[in-house]
Length: 179
Image 1: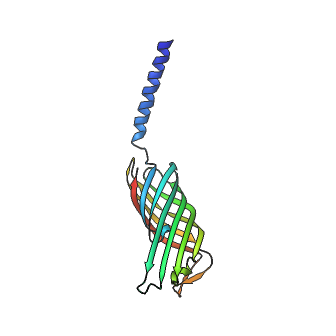
Image 2: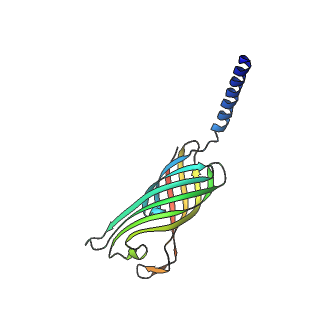
């Protein structure tokens, strides 16, 4: 009886090992770090994404910018922290994504016309996006390109003449490393 049990354990271990070998070539990388140009960070940012399932990922980022004109009168400083859930459509490493979340935004404005978009102080804005994702498996190059949209409220004007709608859309490109 001991030999039969030991034989079953050896066979089970062998089959489980073969199964792991067969999945290793199709395995997706679960984590990614990236640098973001425009998008939810508005100018530049960094981020981290974790795939919970093959089609669901959670990400958090950090961005900011300091702009100061020569006389130091017009100054704009802000920090942004986007927190997102991404739903991936497709399989393998090339796929489309839909995402939604919240943008935690802190603005420090001093007589700058950009303050028409985000008022001075703290705010939380709903965000959503759509685009294309390329993620090498099991590790390597990471790309996310699409449109990042932020709900900013009612219609206003920015720079005194450019009307903006309740949803502010920005192109987004993220490049990084998946592991």
